[in-house]
Length: 288
Image (cartoon, rainbow, N blue to C red; front, side, top):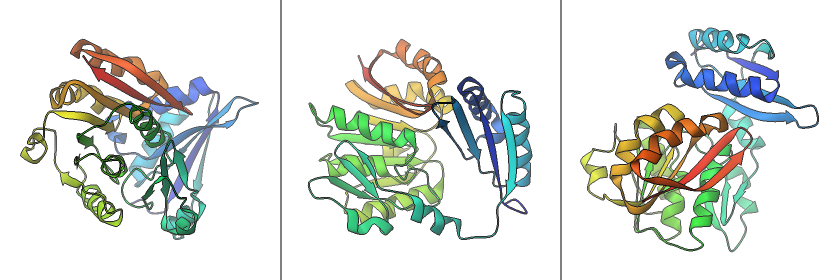
């Protein structure tokens, strides 16, 4: 961890903000960096990137990347010691995505009837439902559920497990997930138990792990990761899906859509849905 926690904020026009975010994604040294990008002022066309580095080295690298864009105003602020998890929980409202209602323990009393309620607290794993990529995946899944069901679902890079849990809660008999981060797999299994969802999450690298491969081919594969691994994993995701199956991909910026599609179209995929939230995209692709 960094000696003193900092937040790096960059403001400017959308093109510069999206280009800078793409540069952060493309930098191998910043592969695990945490940041958000959103439209701060629609009338003035101002977009904002908030970076939360976890080490001094990561902070210096992220700041250098962002300062490489002249149209962005970059500010680095030290954060006072605080229980940031507790503070973030208190400020996260419930999320509604189609039939799904994602909430934390602090919103226990706001759970509505007649919805698929998913209790997911903020923590060490990605995927509380608040990020545009997770919302996009849930919305795409909700639309697909209007006309079809998915018996076997795989969640690649599961994070909190919210996507596989959503599948299990809507009737998928097989819902499994995998993550290269061991704490994420553990947290996802805990969340499955909290939500009374029949899911299994595994700490594994790649889709060839026997615990994942035994259920293939899948009817649906979620992959809410980053553009680079989405491209790299395209053959494995295609191989894990049955003909006519669907891949819901996210974790990519709008500017990265064509890069990702260039990896999937040659494998027989066609686009069925494109969902945008701020600068982020979610793609639902059907395997021909």
